[in-house]
Length: 345
Image (cartoon, rainbow, N blue to C red):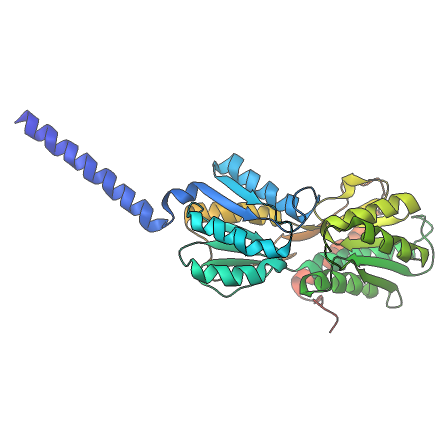
């Protein structure tokens, strides 16, 4: 009798464990893949001290805080994206594959339909698909604030050692929808303060717009020689060339995506923040929990805390008056009183 009771108890425990296992599989079809994620970085890879490094930091945070390991790829060119995505998808071991940057859109649109059971996250654009969660950014909102700051500094040129000529610059990687949001926001912010200010906008372009520091440096020096002594970049790794030019020529620069002030505190006054590191962490966390907003769009703007700017780490002291004015402008953007344009149309 005791043996029979023991046998029944063992069977009950086995059935209970089996039921728990079935529940986990139902909630997370990826099964063991929930323990691992993957990321396809943008061309230029790690070391850009910007976008790619931020995404990687978010993945690292998920590994350290949640115990979710990850693999990553650093494509050398755009044509590498599709094969990398297919190789990762074929493995079947990832709870989510994070694809970074608008230039991965075509590859992901081709690959995702072939792997309907694979979850993807697309950072920097929108693709309508049931197995993709999209993260889009209102870069124009943060750019509006640093554009306003540049104009306010130029209005008090003597205090900041600037030329009293009403001219500032912008160096973008290439002319597309994403970079146009940076450029249009910067231009709008500056002209909100001073409608007559000249904003010199140029693009690196070419075969390697996000990794061509030489061309970015040449553009920045050209802008400086024409009178622009505050220059903002939205050019990924190419932006490091702007900083080199700022140091050599002695003008003021504005960083992008991460806090780049620490690269050269004497010449970089501020950085527009694009908190994709937090986005990457949340993507992996939600994937592991089975709560990814697949098929939907998650917006990162000033209101959501996904966009902003920072003066931290710079040796250039911006006045409390300007900081207060920027806080007022930020509140107006969040409330909708100011609607920042996403392009020049």
